[in-house]
Image (tube, rainbow, N blue to C red):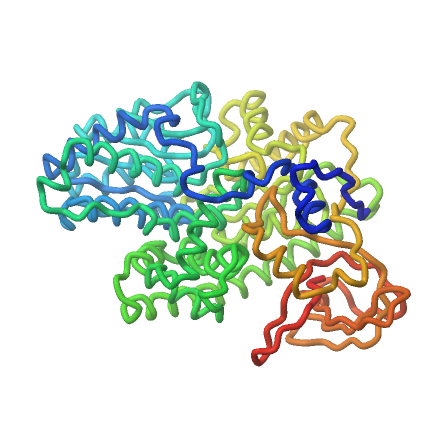
Length: 568
């Protein structure tokens, strides 16, 4: 791996900013100050999203008819927040509680999306309408089954569509081929939020709220859910997504978060008044995801729908326990996977272009995390598979690297080997699939061949991009606060990272695997605290002498005393 500094020149419009901040923003493509104005008035209007007016009409008529609606979600944090948002919005718009419910497939029994089996479960509730959130764009058979039973189907999704679209009554997805919505990076929760924005506008136009004595809901009250789902799903934080996330974070900091999010922050030992995007991604999101990985996502959704902290806290504690269990399962699987990789990869200079790993003892709910970890170690696309619940079935998760669109790779595998996979779907960087046991070896060859085809001539050397070095005066609380205030940071709009040479003065191990250091910038008498989380996961000895660090500038708040700390 090589560390390189970005060398972009800030535009004149950023000249009044502190030089380091101007450099950081310029490195992320920011040329004007209004590109970091995260006011709600800057959001792309809902009307720009294809078919959203049709979706609003369908749902407005459903409210008038007091129709029975079932929300079908996904079993990850994006799906959970999408589901909670849809249920909460419809109830706040005046649909009776008994007329709106949700259903999330148990991944171990039914797999992903609106399958015919899930339609059969939904049919027991006799719904007039099924709304999919964070899924549905690939549910060809499920949509057909629902419509055959007389149900109206509204698909809201953000995943990439296949060659054939479902015959849903309405589809809202910014990634439809004909869609002109400027942000293709909305998470599933962002899509359903936009649908509900359009619905509220139509209901207002029809005087629905006034005629029914309902206080018109302020849609900003749902932005904590939008922020959580957007960050947890690791979608690119383009300008529109940064607005949604920053507005949601502000609500949480101001004490306006829903009780379920407050409870999850509490069990994660985070102060909601100081929450940042990474807290949603690394503290709240994993606890929600643990329910879908190991148990039933309804625990997470009920936590998010809780109306009091007293009701939410037991559910948050249950999610915390599931997350601890998930960590133990994941650690065991990762050790086995990395040991297998070490046996297979003898020559580091000639690593395979991709890897397919599977084990009869692995847990299907955690294979995505294992694939991610191995991918980070190898800098190669990785597929990890575990036995499914059906006989002779394996379920897998794929994780990719920059420059390799993993769903396109799977589509190429399918095109050259029709029927080799039972089903597949996903994004550029992550995807899922299911496959029969007898096809595992053929799939491994086909997948590696497709990656070779897609990466012909690719330079595999991994580059870690930084924002340059800091001067001695830059190690200040003032700069750390300026950088913190310019958030949200996240996928493709990464938190500022700097590089430099440091002399190691003291080191000690903290916790099980973390390294705490006292360092001094080269040729300086200044001393700085630094911490490197999970250092001993991949190192046996503590560093000494002069070392090169890539780090983020953070504020350590200990016993009401603030100091600068390097997050290595």
